Structure formats: C-alpha cells, structure tokens
Length: 248
Image (cartoon, rainbow, N blue to C red; front, side, top):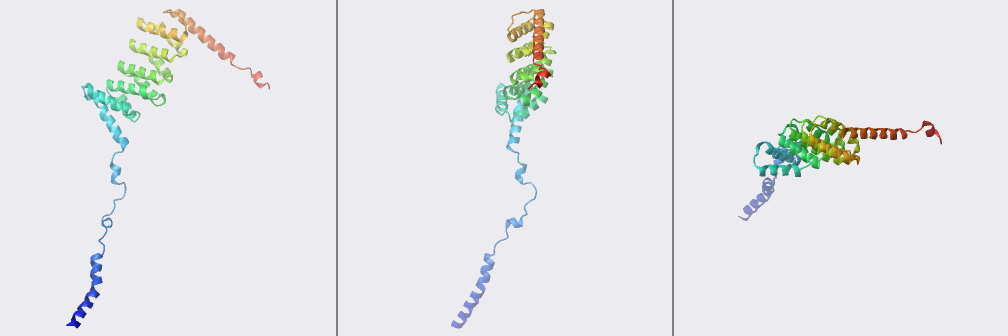
C-alpha cells in the first residue's frame, strides 16, 4: 500500500510542472492580435482649438443676418470683438459677403483694434461699397488706422456723393494735423456746394494753416500757392553744389 502511494506521489511531481506551465502561459497580447492602423491617428480628425474658435466666430457672425433681438446681436458683437485678432478672418469674411450691418461692425473692430499694415488695404476697399453707411464706417476706420490711409481718403473725398460722409472724412484730415492736406482741402472748397460741408472745409483749413481766411476760396488758393512755392524753394536750397561736395 505504501509502495503504491509512493509511486503516485512521484507521478504527481513529474506532471505538476507541465500543468503549471499550461496554467501560467501568458495570454496572447491584444496589441499583437489587433494591428495598429497606419497613417494619422484618430485624434487627427478632431478640430484644433483654433478651428473651434473660427467656427464659434462664424456662428456669432450669423447673428447679423438672422437675429432681430438686440440682446443676441450684442452677444455676437462681444464674441467677435473680444476674440480679436483671432476673429480677424471672420471679420474679413463679413466684409466680403456680409450684410451692410455686418460690414459696418467689422470695419469698426478693424479700426479700433487693427493695424494699418494688416488691415488698411481691405478697409480702404470698403470706401467703394454701394452702401453710404459702409463707406462712412470705412472712412472712420481709416481715421483710427492713421495717416497711411491718406491716399485712399483723398481719392474717396473727390468722389463721395454723401455730404455727411464728406464732412467726416474732412474731419479726419483735420485731426491728423498734416498741412500736406491743405491743397486737397482748397481743391474741395472750390467745387463744394453744400454749406455744412464748406464749413467743415474752412475749419480744417484754419486749423492746419493757422490762418483765418474764412470761406474765401481765392484767398485759400493764394495761400496754397504760396505754400507750394516756399516748399519748392526750400527743396532747391537743400540741393548741394557738386563742387562743394568734392572739397575736403
């Protein structure tokens, strides 16, 4: 009996490692069973934070065309204004294809927070808009963007049919304080028919020149001519004699 139990014990010891090996053999790795897809990962299809912001700005801009609630419009304006400069692309979209109200708001933000180097060109294009309100908003934006907008404003003043718009553009030249605008103002005074606009022209001329010539076009033309002659004379005096330049 003892001999038989002893044999069974040995058999158990012989087979035990085999049994443990089967029970403890590692399961196949799930990563090995499931191949990793090549190419971009799943996260690449998710929009970036910048893309999310642009969509939020576009959603806000829609309010200009669909809402009739002041509260909703104020909220949309707040999103676009506080989001600048990240909202600049959406504001440019508003200028390109938005309603007149959307264009006016976009011009206001670009004038308040924009930069001449980045925004002056597109703002200047709005001076040709069919809406007089949009043209006025563009002129006011150029005032804030600075004197680099003078060429665009000069061309605009010579063709703007709306008297109030002309007054605001003239006021811009006065605020910039550059006497170089005097010849243009005199030219405008010569052809201007509207009394309120003439008053703005005279005020601007007096501020820029320091002269009090009133609404006297001939006197202002004489003054502008004298100013141009003096400028030319100064330029000639600044030309150095070539012989003097060669002397040690």
